[in-house]
Image 1 (cartoon, rainbow, N blue to C red):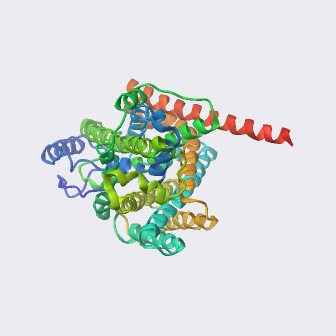
Image 2 (image 1 turned 90 degrees about the vertical axis):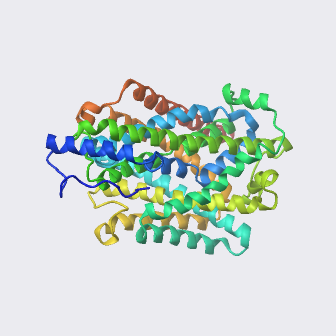
Length: 460
């Protein structure tokens, strides 16, 4: 979300030559603005990133894991919270310090082959995620009103593209967030059913894990839907957009005295946004475990079956609340998925980029959004079950995140990129820990799948 700045520039034009006097004045104005605005008004990219993280893929993945494994993986939510918050803070920090998105920084400091490999990984993961999300949105609407899901797939694809091209994202996001409030129904379920709270607390605080392909796949899916590549590129790009919209702000490498204001706002915004995401994820797993697994249902195969998780709290409104949640989070997440891909490709090829720009001023940027969304729509022609598609899109994100996170960490620790704002010890620990966790889980899954393929070949 990109709220309009309520501040006024101290002079008709902002200094672009790094003049210390102008930057000092800008910092003073920014401090006054920060004090004068409410805390909620200061939240932006981090909160939107966190909300879009609970997209249909996330809801389906958490539901499937809860139904299949019960409370066993509740511990993943408190584990991933500091890790995802750390890597998102690092991504946002790169944007604020350099005034450029991740792909633009990769283009400036790494070989073209590495840049293109990262962008291709992001694009493939995003298109698969877009297709899965749109398919789930269509199936949810069909569940309510009937009709052919292919019609709704095309409708939601066109709607997502049309909104991004003709209406600034920040203007319609507040309305979508009201739809996402339906996800709070998952929190309400725990107050109307009997839960073994001791088991819940133990499962939350004490990690358990069994060595099986199903367990490793579930772990990768949880990590992938929680710590997704598109979130890194999106938040970095949106921090840059916010900076450009504020006439008193400048990249921190040019305006170091603004660091306290800009980084302080970003840190609160990011950690709060990720907390919202993880709390929702925790309660979706908990609800699915209590409603499905406890009754012997270990495999969710349809959206209508997934909606049944809300019946204890919502009764006849279960389908409606579930559909509103899936559609609301989908409309929130698809622009983030398509937009992050467009930012990455646009920065790679030096196009004009930005959701605040008119289509005529950034034609290739908006064309990329339309193409990525259309590709996601076409994926639904394969007629893959929506719940399975959502789950496996999370697995794809989990596998692709690790190499992208390695590159982000290398960027953030380079003096020529970050100057005096290289990562603190806290962020180094969080960033490399998150990268290590994603790398180990992805390698474990690849090893298990490779072993399975090898056994199958030898068996023949």
